Length: 346
Image (cartoon, rainbow, N blue to C red; front, side, top):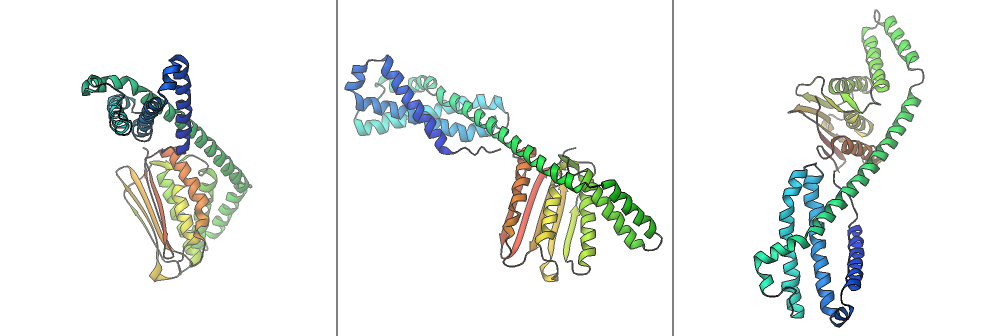
């Protein structure tokens, strides 16, 4: 889960810290000395704060993201000495090289610039950068997770509302379809089978799609039923390659994810040209599922209208799988491709 924090938040934080540090230092140290050496004081203070800021940013966007985000606390603590070494190197560059070239003065005297002493001394001064970046990252991670949970709850409420609207006397609907099936099974076998498929499809929509997770075998059965009925709709004008590779049974995955891709193919794709076949491919291997789709669409159609559903799916995937999924879509030359790879749960 990548944190999307505006960079100016970090700048505002450090401007506030710089001002606080300056006022605190001015209050407890010799004000006369500070006033007399204002230029040097500002150089030393600003380069010191800039060194902390560089290591803070580096730690926030790399080390924290590698370890704290994945709950690898031990690895994070092991990385702290490396961050402190980087702080010592950055501070040396800013104060003992750049500042010296401009002002002609060092911050550390000659003996203190000896490498062993300098690194040991800056292990203490670099700690605020490491601690602050970790606390800041954990704070923003908490805020981001809370926001994500609220958005997911809102989406679930919307989905529940839509589901309630769709559940008008579902038992009456199923009983009626079963009645039709009973009447037709001895007369029109094919039509009776189609009604049974429709009944299974509707039952799945009403009873299963409101859950967070779905059984893979049921999800694929739903897709097969869905495609079966679409073939009836298009008659002999449905040019689609639908394939499933791999073994599956009771593995679990996020509900309705596969349906989203299949439904969009039928909603926006062209099927009446054998030279422009649509493709839906599902592959199960090594406890991962991959689904990819490809289809042509009508020139001039605003395919970006599918963006809302895609964004909602992305949020659900982030909530369910964190950074363990791959999701992508490509639109070019009146063709649209999608791809999803997710881990399966036993």
